[in-house]
Length: 297
Image (cartoon, helix red, strand yellow):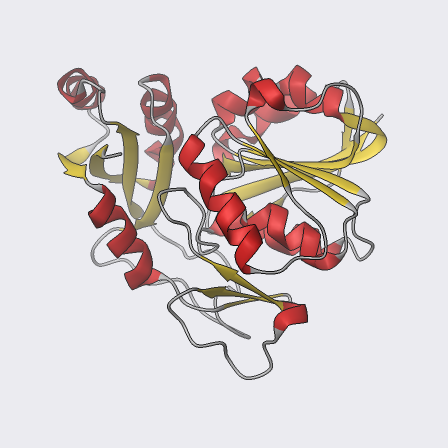
């Protein structure tokens, strides 16, 4: 399934309003990188780990839309804001998507406890079945490299004791669900509205010979009631707000909630939406993206 893509450059301070515009226009995936001439993020301590967020003044946004999206009206809205420069659009085919994923993926070390290894990469020294996951995103989002995914992975690893039951809502490739299963969760439920994501999650689960079977479900098939000791959702902010009741209903009292896919300027919206039901700890930040986490009251 092909996607339409819009790429643009803007000042970093203008990212939140542009992200909100793109999300409102139907964006299904958003990434941010340094614009030409900006310094790269600093690497330290292993693949995929950052010492701090880069001090980018100019960034490039890449937004994905479904193939049937009318792009011209979205481009017109972007131009009307006066905030976006070098706007251009193209079509990203399945082959383009899979090729781009294969080109940019590399083995990632997560907090020194777990390796995420793409299917086309040789496992690094020290990576074995018990501390490694093989991952092929296929046509789904989630190679493990995006800052929001890394925030979620490190949060999961940092829990110490794996949650008895975890729900990964908006599972994409299944990387977070697979990680929970590898770490020792007794039950893991991966939920996504995209059938390609559910297919990728199932295939990745089979490829890793996990100790439990991951339950891959559409939102309509997701369990009802408070079944989860932890719920993690790495999706767009608007969807996080829309799904507030769903995510909280899945979570047991005292259960852990982790929300990502959030830019620094969007945190207040999420904290306001969830604050009456969740005791939040300090946000965790990476490259301008946040993970909000806390416990359900």
